Amino acid sequence: MAIRPISDAAAEKAAASIHQPRDPNTLSNYNAWKTKHTTANFEIDFEAKKLKGSVELTLKKLADHEPKIVLDTSFLNISSVHVDGHKAEFSVNGSRIEPYGSPLTIRVDDAATKHEVKVKIHVETTKDCTALQWLTPAQTSNKKHPYMFSQCQAIHARSLFPCQDTPDVKSTYTFNLRSALPVLASGLSTGSRDFEPGTKGKSGTLLYTFHQEIPMPSYLFAVSSGDLAAASVGPRSTVWTGPEELTACQWEFEDDVETFIQAAEKIVYPYAWTTYNVLVLPPSFPYGGMENPVYTFATPTLISGDRQNVDVIAHELAHSWSGNLVSNASWEHFWLNEGWTVYLERRIQASVLGGDQHRDFSAIIGWKALSDSIAQFGEDHEFTKMIPNLKGQDPDDAFSSVPYEKGFVFLYHLEKLVGLDKWDKFIPHYFNEYKKRSVDSYEFKATLLSFFEPDAEASKQLATVDWDKWFYTPGFPPRPDFDTTLADECYDLANKWEALNGGAKEFKPSAADIKSFSANQSVVFLERVQSFSHPLSPDLVDLMGSTYAYSSSHNVELVSRFYVVGLQAGAKSVYQPTAELLGTVGRMKFVRPLYKELLKRDAELARRTLEKNRDFYHPICRGMVEKMFERQAGK
Ligand code: BES
Ligand code: ZN
Image 1 (cartoon, helix red, strand yellow):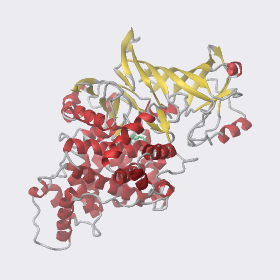
Image 2 (cartoon, protein in one colour):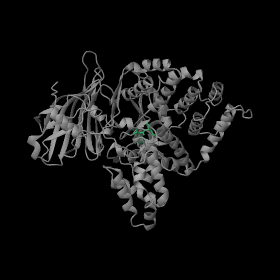
Image 3 (cartoon, helix red, strand yellow):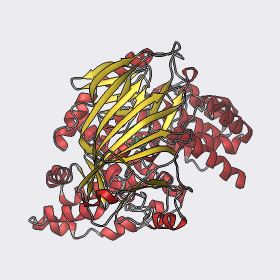
């Protein structure tokens, strides 16, 4: 492997180039050269657990006198680089610049006069790749075939292939992926071809190809391969998953997907990516959903048999506009992706379910998530700002509900300020103005103010906005006046339990208490119980679990919150079930609070549970849990 260590002076220079104008989380010199098209040619090698092949980048020159192209890489094996067909000199930083990886520097002296160059890099991923999870057949549901999937957001694309790993650069993509099993990627399929028989009894492979003609940032590059089958869930939508799970997945989504697309199209403008599909992944998928273009990647915990988790689909679908067409220019402006997406998700839900009550109910759940995040970080913490300073930081560490919910509250505030009718005209304007581009918070502000400039009344209202305060004050924003109708029923019930816990005898819990509740109402109820000043008694935990069937629910949103209630109460009956749940779901939203509480109650069981499931968890989730254990041990 021809990896030549870069000189100290060059390393220093590369480190200095962390300070890019808009994105502090890339080491690439994307202001001098900009990727226009990316072709990824990879063989998916399940045995070696690697992608191997080459990537071809077409880069446009933006600045004169820049005789080198610097790309992001992380734990890659790079064997050769060609520029316009000629072997080129290159170096990879010997020591990593944490957490950004090892910049790859390519000399382009001869090409310095050209306006465009084609760089071809032969590359393999390594066992340290943070973007991929490889499952052995034994780790899959039918235990027959291996499986692999990627998760690139925020800065993991660089551990798949050298690239300008910043959301400020958008490229069109061609995917040429050879595999023994069906493949999906974040483009439109252009078919499969060129069968190659396997040697020594191994399966043969096909070349699966995809094309993405809408320019997209590197973090939306996605690939998955395994024993996959597809079923229709709408006129322009399919769901993909293992054959055994297919029917349940189809049922879960078929009523809502097209309704959501049409609702979103009414709020913004027509869907741009041709088809909208969902890939339901194995349970170790670390997120609820990931908005990869054409194929949203989703956790199997959405398949609860009650269609109560489709809000995640509304969310990922909404990213088709906010995030995927109009992308945050850096992770510091993440609220433009997630705040807008939560805003659109709630508008979609309100338009489907009818009425602001539902939107405000969902916003109340969001406010609780925001409070929890602020409590976790501390009210003065940098990461509780709408625009945090991420220089030298890992965006994964800053990840929380803050950009989602502070961003939402800000947009909700702006909507109320100018009035819904006027605001609804701004939405398509904004998404049109920045489509296929990246945007930062200052451009958002300028676009908003200039859109309303001809309107004296709206401008007067907008003049009251203290932009710097919203952008840079840590902690809570002002709490909007949400309609609490749907939440009040949940609080009333929680109050009765609190009284019961205090010794009052009038209340006799029965299943009828929650008969009219949606799953989200149970969520609000359980979260209220979690914040009782005196934890429930263990007996009452058991009574609640059986009376409301939370302990046997197939909806992880409910079971996991119920277990947290039980762990807080020291109810031994939930310890073992918690450990078991931690062996079947790897979604961080559930894994994090369950380990946190289990560690407090039974550290030994928590440790055994982690040991047993280490290989089951995704690298990102495993890292997160290990950090939690270290912090706990340090205390
Ligand atoms: N894009 C995010 C997931 C993400 C964020 C992955 C940052 C990696 C880094 C996705 O759209 C998301 O927000 N998913 C949520 C669901 C949603 C309904 C809030 C999740 O995973 O829970
Ligand atoms: Zn999102």
